Structures are given as structure tokens and as C-alpha cells.
Image 1: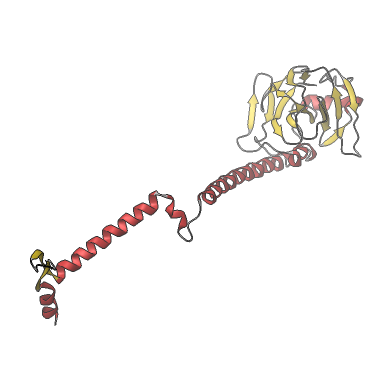
Image 2 (image 1 turned 135 degrees about the horizontal axis):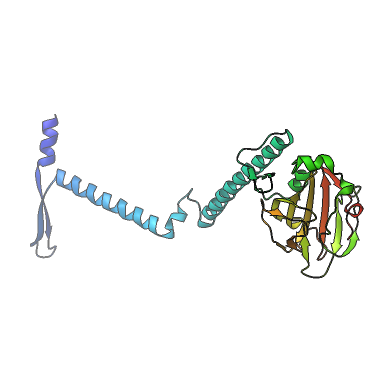
Length: 281
């Protein structure tokens, strides 16, 4: 049976084209069924390849059912990038709170300890997380006990400390814990320099949506000072500062600002203090 089929495939035929008027042979060719099948298969393959190339290199591919349009593909790429950024920010946030919990428990976060042997100054560097207002108050409210100098802390009290004024100006909005205004608003001349109230170390220096450019400084006696709505920051996280040293420039940044001013806060062991009770502005 196979031999007969193979023989039929190899049987020769002649394709002749005649002139319909004179019946003269114009063109002829010898064919076999195998040659005809091979030629048709090769031609079909070439046509398929040409169609694929045409669709792949032109806009015709967007008319194929199920193929996403260009704008959809662009949205998919942007969404993927946003998800990647969100995962990165969530990791930073988790690392930030992990370090805070470690500090509260009295331990030292891994790879965040900076020691300066010149002044026997130990500082814990908090992870660099550009937190918003949802997290920035937790930085203080979690009672972060970063004792800068234990010996002096046992000897001095808050009433014995001399605080430098962060900026000379007029208090336009006083401390009010009832309305959650945990500081004072100070209006001064344009581009006035903001100074550190004590020696300390910068534990956060960056941007937040609600309070603009913000800088937090850790001092001895578990004191933390906060300076908000600045137009420019002069110090970075981890920098040591001296009392009266310029750390920022007064500004009007952030969603909660009502004009150029400094919002200054003073925290002790996680509790907000009224700055006017300790500093003369």
C-alpha cells in the first residue's frame, strides 16, 4: 500500500498551456504530485512569515483580538514601576519602625551606630525614611530614648539648661495640646537663619507633604527639637550641630503652612513641651 502511494506521488504529469485560437502549445512543465505538494507547502510558509512580519512591524497588531493597545501597555509599564516604588517605600517604612522598636527596647539597631571618639559622643542614626505626617509625629511620640550623654543627664534638669532661640521673631500661634498644635509658630524676616537650640545630632532631614522641609535634632536629656516649613535645609541626617549653629532657612513649604514662618516643637521623652516656658523668642 505504501509503495503504491509513493509511486503515485512520483508519477509524472505534464501541465500544458495552449493558445485557445490556434491550439498551439505556449508553455508546458513536467510535474509530480510530490513536487506540487512541496511547492504549495513552501509558498504557504513564505506567506505565513510575511504576514507575521507585517503584523509585528506595523500597527496592524493592535487589531488582533486580545492584543493590548499602546496606551494600555504604557499604563501597564507605569503601574509596574509604581508597584515597585511602593514595595521599596514599604520596605523602608518597615525598617524605620523596626529600628524605632529596637531603640525603645534599649537595643541598638544593626549597622546604625555612629561613634565619635573625639567628644565621646554616641549617636544612633535612624534609618533614612522620608516619612509623611502620619509617621513623623510617631518619631517623637514613641518615646525615643536616645541618651546623648548619660553623665550630664543625671546632673542637669530642663530648668538648668540654656536654650538658644531658633529664630528671633514674633509668636503668632502658641502651643496648644488640645488642638494638637505641639509647638509655636514664629514669624521672622525673610530668609532668616534657623539655629539649633542645643548641641545635638540630626536624626531626620528631609521633605514631608504637610510640613515641607523638616529637620529633627536629638539632644541630651532625651530632648528632641523639630523645625518645620523651612525653605532650605543646611544639615543632613547624621550631622552633629552646635548650639546656635545655622541648620535651615525659614520658609513656607508644606500643605499646612499659612505663610512664611517657622513651626518649632520641643519634645522630652516623647512628651511635647511648651517652648515658650524654656526659650525666650
